[in-house]
Length: 125
Image 1 (cartoon, rainbow, N blue to C red):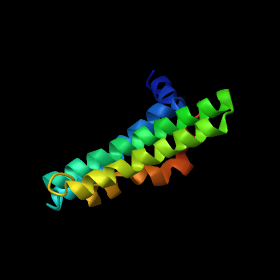
Image 2 (cartoon, rainbow, N blue to C red):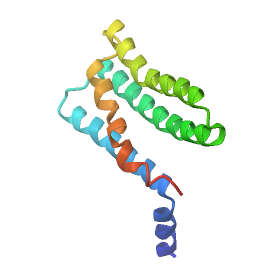
Image 3 (cartoon, rainbow, N blue to C red):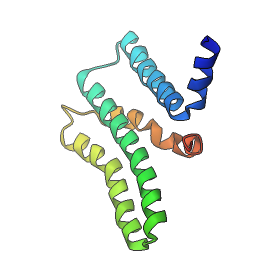
């Protein structure tokens, strides 16, 4: 019976992607806690970067579906500019509120943006 459960986990690619992402997030945090390099602004920036990275990922999937259904280039351009805002707003927040949010944490948290071209085909079920 255990073999059937593991086969279902591997067939559900999105669950496997979330699991790998959570392992990466917590391994980075655990490593930095062990090295005593973590402070409050860094953690806030890191989680803000991760949340913006994942929201940009899901927004990108919505953007492609919307483009295919409407075929309106101006709507696509407006939604694309909004997607860029999802990535730029955390940096603006970190530059204005440096005591609360660390820009280095945001840069490390946005690692998902660089992984998007590699995992995009893996999430299509």
